[in-house]
Length: 342
Image (cartoon, rainbow, N blue to C red; front, side):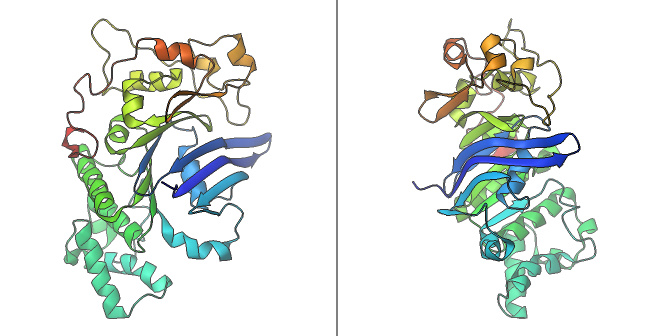
């Protein structure tokens, strides 16, 4: 299947007084139509910058962003405008992303007004249809954002993203600010919309349980680079990169098996202005050797669709895998089932 989106050696650097902050430093991945790619990593690794650069909210320093065969990275705003309806975003904080002075109906009507679609009566009908699609009644159109709950506001954010029938939606920590029960409802809504409309998602999150539940494939990011990418099943059954294993061990929802000690991830994330030489994870890795400090690791194919950037990946892949969420009974259902187990 031809990818909907191909990101090739993407870089985004921000100038600084002492150099450049290398927020994204050579990221590559693909997303197929109707697929969900989860992007995980600790705060400061560059996840959100990847999403915003793909949407061209940030201009990339270098690299290619190929959307349906067309590289949008070098395009100017006038050339980008017709493509913006194909890629939309759902933000982490639904309250700050909605105009507090506008009623919900006006907020959802605005995309149609900007694009000159339909007469006023037609646009009102489309607004009602959007509200109903995301589980809100038509009466919500007359309310202001502060009159809605957090979950309801996020449903409005999703409705706004759906208005122009995009092919890809970037969900940037879209459920992290919500209560657990509401989070499950929003996840189920996103999954149902994907089944119905065939939308692709880039799902950015630090919550491994949520990512495992919604994603077809998962990319693990560390200090501006992707260190491991695989299908969700492959990653959960056999995480190879030491950083991926550390994320699993650090998750309170993924307890270690009886008698097994957790691998504690020590130290802080290094500065993206002056990243470590060689493997960027070597300053915190318990398996690091001299070659890790000197030489940047090449990507090793552990299995079809499972790539790892680690000098010791082959040896680690043969070691005993850490317990997975499924083995520990943390997630009772499979991906794209009801999210109540979360």
